[in-house]
Length: 424
Ligand SMILES: [Zn+2]
Ligand SMILES: [Zn+2]
Image (cartoon, rainbow, N blue to C red; front, side, top):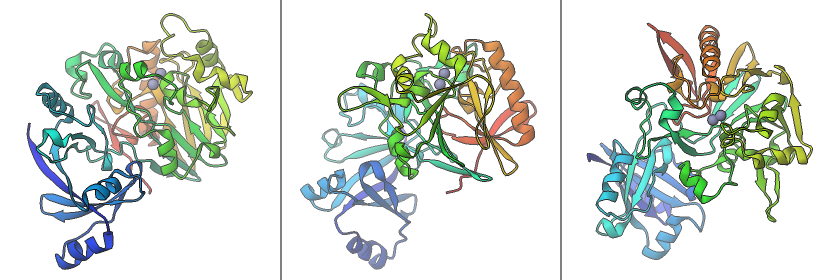
């Protein structure tokens, strides 16, 4: 494998004292810190040519860095090697019986994917492997957009994996594998990106997979929820209590799993305690009467408790859910699958859910094998893409691992996404 020294991590006990040396005495440039909330650490990067130094400061006593400093004192903590393909790198190391801390890559800072190698296999050095995100990727950090009077925040409930063939229907693997690299079980990585819409009220569209499933399920679907919706809500300054309306594109488990949760006694309850849940009636009927083909995707624990709790509202047709927010049936993926159209200040955005799950699904014929009515999926997508280009609609991709939202373009019959600039 080819690897480049990305940075050297240095655990510090007293940041001011460390800055007195690195910044003042050495005269190096220290970047604005980056908070890695999940690990209770603040990282201060220092440019040093091709590579960087990273001063790591604990922000809580139970942080791994705090424990490290406690045990070893401040000093060299890890080195980070940048690789092109972290999955391939980990495969190669596993084949050689190298002891890994992370068997699977996990999300790191700046949208990178990272994994640590155990020091016992690296001669006493903690080695981090890192695959950087493409320039446009915002893999897990909430992305904010302003549309007239409405604020849109794309959140993350982590990632999972589905069979690449099923995700691309009749498209040959030689074509789709260039867009989405399959793992050793032929699965590709998909994001789960619920959308917050803040206007007259606070709404969340879909809620990811949630945390009710067992280890076997997580294994089967390669679930990585090390950063999940609760983290993402917190990073956006929200809690489950803030949500007034939960709106479903449809009720498949990767969209509705996060609608319910278990309380301390194991009882199922609505995850968003103050919210009304809005579901299309046809979708509700299909989800509560699954057949052999649809059963694996419709898990009653995700939505039946909503009816029991009296927080379910069924809508029969395309209509406004709150000012500026409308639902529009797409069909195709499921007969009553719907997209959400947001309009404010003369601008428009659309949360297209499984109509166009990733940016790779833009060509008309690239519809999913999962779609119950692929021809309808193809037609409705064709018409929407035309509309999105003509009206410059900001399109949210719920499952794209790298692109939360963008504008569609078409040149010489080739469609592409221009990732949207983010208003922080
Ligand atoms: Zn679906
Ligand atoms: Zn889906």
